[in-house]
Amino acid sequence: MSFFRPNIDRLAGYTPGEQPQDTGWVKLNTNENPYPPSPHVVEAITQAAQGRLNLYPDPLGTAFRKAAAEVFQVEPDWILPGNGSDENLTILIRAFADTSDQVVYPYPSYILYETLADIQGAAHSRIPLNADWSWNFTAAAPLIDRAKLLLVPNPNSPSGNRWSDETILRAVPPRGILVLDEAYGDFADQPHRAQLLRSDKRHQIVITRTFSKSYSLAGIRFGFAIAHPDVIAGMRKVKDSYNCDSLSLAAATAAMKDQAWMQQNVERIRATRQRLADELAKLGFLVTPSQANFVWTTHRDRASRELYLSLKARKILVRFMVYHDVPWAANQTLEGLRITIGTDAEIDQLLATLREIL
Ligand SMILES: Cc1ncc(COP(=O)(O)O)c(C=O)c1O
Image (cartoon, rainbow, N blue to C red; front, side, top):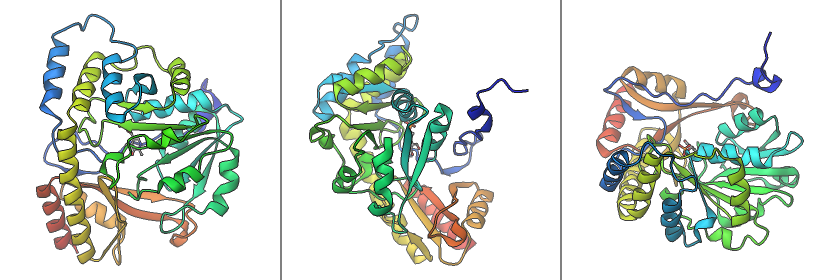
């Protein structure tokens, strides 16, 4: 006999990417940054650790909000710090989606949205993307119309493509909230600086950002949301009082203030991304042009699963992804590899190993 809510019993649960705890891996599977964070981050964590760990952290993250507000050119009350973007996504679903409401997202995209909606007990629907990862607004329109919450990763995962502002603005639900999940926003050609929010007269757009990717801080768990202060105030009611600890607040504030460090790593990753895409194409891979710190690829002749396993046997970890019910895929099942952009040396090792395997 189970005492869980029925929707929890039915839930398979989200499976995060593999995080091997032994050494020697080339780890290209969960879109972490291969470069270290700003040296100011370690200084800030050390200082915070020597400080007031016996006291609760600032529940509002005041210093962080000030630093982020300056970068994004908004007031600090437009910013909500969170324990990773995933926490802000959880807060959004808890705050906006009743059991009678529809949570909607493009598909294939970030699978966690579905899990979070299931945990909440909210209804959810997928907006099927076209084979070139564009939106089919004829199919999407009725779903957008019904959506209370529309979650859109931009750039998208697993494809890495980025939709234009025009597409995004067409997707704002008439009776709901659009969440722009910009986990990979800094890797795009035109990184957003929250300009879409300025045209958002009805306060329907929330942007979420993470420190796990461009800021090289997946290990500390920190993200933030940007939205009109009325929306942020509502979200704040839902969060844990002390959702960000003193060390992560100190780290994120220092990282946010060192934009030059982050940008320099982003530039390196973008250059390696281009090189990887070109070399994969020469090996017979089809590569979706990426605006993120990973590429989505399939091979002309070889099954993705087989390549994933062959690489894994050689201690190179990439992400093998399977999406069911994709109308344009063979047997409606889309399989492919999502490969994180590592250092140049890691990518060279990957390419050499692929040449050997193929
Ligand atoms: C689209 C997308 N959103 C959010 C996240 C999670 O970010 P965080 O590490 O800040 O929870 C990820 C992580 O891979 C992601 O791919």
